[in-house]
Length: 396
Image (cartoon, rainbow, N blue to C red; front, side, top):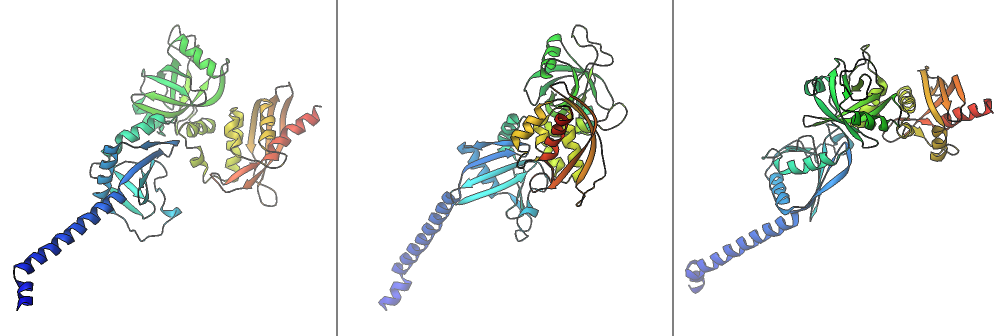
């Protein structure tokens, strides 16, 4: 009877309560331990158009980010195939790497309120619409040297006639102010003052030039990827600016006055947007060669060299030496492919060397090599170095 009393009497109720309290203690303890283990301790945010990154370490921001991820609406199939096919479907935007005590999560997004986790295939819709990441995104964008990849149609609505803008040269970091005066297929602009004209001329090495340069145009809160030429031409209406005429600024998909898209301007727009690799990802061999020659024509040897495959006897040093000897370069049409594998192209080129040598309409063969990496093809290094070696032989 005592045993039954113990089980059903006051002692039994007390024992039952102890067990319940103990279980609750274990439950909340485990939740606390799990919460501590899975807590976000830091996060890194980077932009697809900028190789740098920032670290988010503010405790309040991290706690709010943790809460937003935990309470997010989740969609997608976690069982689908992982890996390359599940990477950022947008091809642009931001990457957020969240570091916890028990592991790491990676998210990709265009809008901070809609994040994609490539490891699981899930999409997270944050309840605050991404407000917890707004300051970090703004900081990353401020660090990026690149501009927004906006189309001419979009830019034409933002950068209106008589609007003033700040132009920053991507390579030198020098900047000056312009005013848009005209242009329907691209922007016709003029430096605002004589000081602005002087800075622009300095960017071009002290001499006006038709060469295209990658720039970022800051106007009405936007920083837009663009390309400029550096030659005063046509009419100009701003007095006292020491600039006889206007110059052209091109944007994504804009056109020359003869209604034709200019490859050289577009290459510089890609560069100004940090999209050069992306735009060439699916290019054919002939297209890669065209763009490499275009970069050399614009004297952007750094960009051109990215499309050259180094090899013994034609490494970085030899390529640098070959290109640094040029004072100007002009390439004709790229022929249809030939050779055993259809990867040899013939181009007629004219160029001048800094030693005074002039070469006109030289027929040059360029071989393209299939490669792995950001570009599907690269130009064989000896194709570049042999071009000038032949000139030295003929003119020696």
